[in-house]
Length: 428
Image (tube, rainbow, N blue to C red; front, top):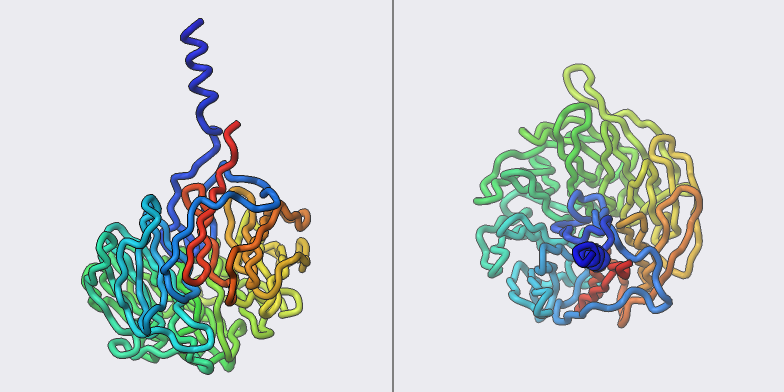
């Protein structure tokens, strides 16, 4: 009897069997670059004040970069004292561990960097707005190697306003790091992740009349469409796929491009790629298939801007439905069936204003609005259902950094300050 009671006490003391918190967020948009956290056992609704604040760290500098989280280490970028820095934060000690200069401060009306660091083992890869790519020691911030996208690789951004500069987050895949200089002789390049040595350049031909040549503001994702491992990226002239092994151009799609800024990271699923841009453009699903000794992208459907256009807040695919904020410089919640393009619900209205960045965890959508409102909503095609909201403190500029969800916590960069909230549901 005593043994049975002891077992009962131990079982009741354990968290729910479905709770999983040991999940890092090592790069832009999480483990798979899709905005999804594998964490479970999270709060399914928020009290009026929002989830409890676990801690805050200040001194990050100006910027819109999100964060990468691996264990107790948090990495981001920021501008201060006329320079741009990569920095690491100790989540246990709640202090900045190191700060490494990676370039000049980004001087335009939207101050600071946009890129998110990529953590790979004992190294961190960061891209400054000036186009300086650095490989840093994760423990110390020491520079292992660096490469300039403009000077070494002929890089350039798409059309005007090019003063927004480089914004992508590097992709590490196997033994290489993939970035997008946007050059005529190398729209994308693969570099040896240990040395920075050039492996290949991807030459992308003219895709059509829309957009302008150069790198855009999106980040590379990996696809296995049509049985070919490839890197998919949104450029100034549209979306493309290049052979992961050689950099050979495989396919392109021009209709999604606009002349100002192509931003959202594409969604890849099977043989399909879903893409959207703002500035009155729209959204599209394309199917990738082998054809005539090569590959081609065939438009499955196109959604006009009045149905869907994502500006820069990103998109989430969950159970065959795309969830996003729609409208140029708007974040009206919208749900669209990926396969058909049919709208499940929306655009909905809530108390947030302007653009919204969206992430996903444990059946919930985390909408972060430009005015600092955080909104929790249910990821269901049935209807738009809110489950709580709160306001991020001390918002003075555009509240744009994408939410990161890792190890049971919500990480919200707000310019100079990182706010970390505890999302873990109370033990039952």
